[in-house]
Length: 320
Image (cartoon, rainbow, N blue to C red; front, side, top):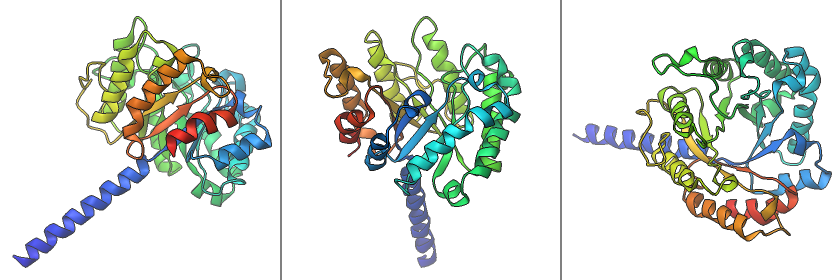
């Protein structure tokens, strides 16, 4: 009897340790930094990022075509930006966690997805070879899939027939097995005429198979006050850890281990000294909706405007 009790206690202990580890991994306090923003950062901006409450920095390049749609083009035209960003952050904060974004796949170029696996893998391999081994191990947390939606039609009996999903799935294997890193996706929640279909596609990718370690949903409500249901829908997604409709219905039963989070959205209209009342009202609804998930689920900021003021006026107060 004593042996059984002891084994039960050990089992509970290990389960609690596993839960704690999962929560620690999910404790992403992130910010998206886009190529256009990065090129304008001053030394003071880099220092503000390093001194912030942000833990994770997601580097987001432009569309693949801007770099030539090839491994050589990515190496020549994108890798220098990534390397400089990594060096700027790590030299100022040794604990910075960085997500390297892939060249962008969008509604304008998604036909390149079926042929993009090898160039993307070569691009990441080239970066790994150029980044100091210690920095690669300790500071490069993972790869960000720079594709905001699932493009093209989807056969829900065979989702891998869709080229963009197949690319994400195959790149996931490389990220996890070859590079030993985590994989992140930040798609937008549905809006417009095909809202339900957009949500369904995200649901099948996220809920069925562990393609991504983390899926962080863009509500889009801040930019379109006519879709308040999106904020409710994303709240359901995070609280249920499954992609849900705006009414809270799970799109398809969850089989994956993917952790679901939310994106905080703000524009220059509420970056101090700007304080546009209507935009501030929308932003405060985000704060009210997602504060409860801090430290439990991934939260990543999209911002526009002056980075130092965005950090001090909005992002740091939320994460502190």
